[in-house]
Structure formats: structure tokens, C-alpha cells
Image 1 (spheres, protein in one colour):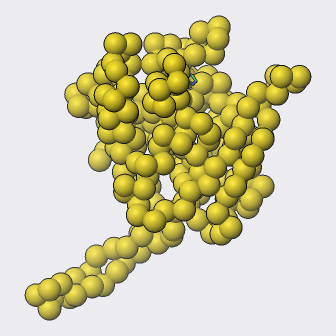
Image 2 (spheres, rainbow, N blue to C red; image 1 turned 120 degrees about the vertical axis):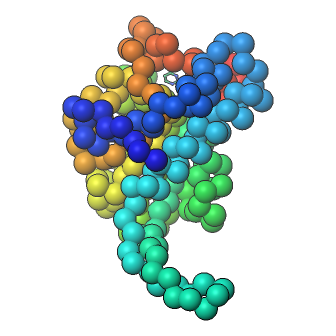
Length: 220
Ligand code: URA
């Protein structure tokens, strides 16, 4: 899969804008799309994103023998990965990661806006014990201001995950979110399927798809 780099952001990777991807995004953006279809088609995009994320992992030479008793010089993944979902919407992406990486360890962080300071605040985190040895797929479908994602990355850095081993997997970004994330953490890779126009006053991405968590989990 050849992923187009956004020119001014060398670590932001946009999925190829194929007709298939455009059609999938159109379905999940459509306000008339019912929940089962929203889940089904969002899951398909998540799968494409996770597959693209795996393309960014290093490989090492690996020699195997085929059933024809012939030695074959292939490659194998060098490191191990884990997922960390930003609750609640990021949890929707866990299944897509599990489908591609069986038995993958998945941590969680809960970050919400502090009513007093209006700043993102960490309420809960549970991470795999060996996370500092792994590549981390940080999962959140919508990158709006970037406040929660930036706080989540701080949690990972405090757990000694090197910045360059973090891949932020995301369906739709706002330009402001990309700008804030890349300014704070230039070495993180952002894998996304779409960069939208802007945010509205309520910090929803425009044109966007509404509240992803509500539509995916049926709480709207
Ligand atoms: N989170 C969402 O679910 N939707 C947005 O538009 C922005 C953040």
C-alpha cells in the first residue's frame, strides 16, 4: 500500500484515497446510516488503518523451509506491538487490531476534560507491563483539538515508550489536531484515512461524522 505523506508533515500518513475508501467514509459520514452499518463500515476502515500501521514496523531477514523442503529467505517482524485505546471511542478500534494481531495486548487510558481547569485530565490508565519494549498503536478514531491524544502520549512517554515507537491510528483528523500533535511530538507517526476541513465551535470535526463513540456504541 503506497501511503501519501502530507507534505508539510513527514510523519503523517494518509491512506491512499481510493474509491473504495471514499465510499466507506461516505457511508459512515451519512447521518442516515444506521448503527449496524456504521459499525460494519467503520470496522472496515479501521482494518485498513491497522494494516497500514503494520507496514511501518521494521522487519529482519528470516529464513524458513517451505513444505517442498526448499529454504526461503523472507522477513519477520522485528519487534512486538501492543495497542492502547483512548476511552471510550478508541475502544471501538480494539477489535480491528485483534483481528490482525491475534493475542495482542491492549491497554487503556481514560482522559476527560477537567471541569475546573478545562484541560484534559488523566482519570485512569492500565498499560501492559512490558510496554516500553513494544511498538504502541495508540487508538482514537477522531483527532479534534488533540488534547486527549497529547495527554495519552504523555502517559506513554512516562511509561518509557520511546516517541518514535508510537503510531497514532485515527480515522479522521482536523488540521488543528494534526498541527498540535506533530508540534508536541514530531517523532510520532500518525496514520489516518482523512483530514477534514476544520472544527466547529463545539470542537466537532467538520464535515466529520458526529460523535463517533455515540454512533458506534449506540448511545445517541
Ligand atoms: N470526537 C468525535 O466523536 N467527533 C468529533 O467530531 C470530534 C471528536
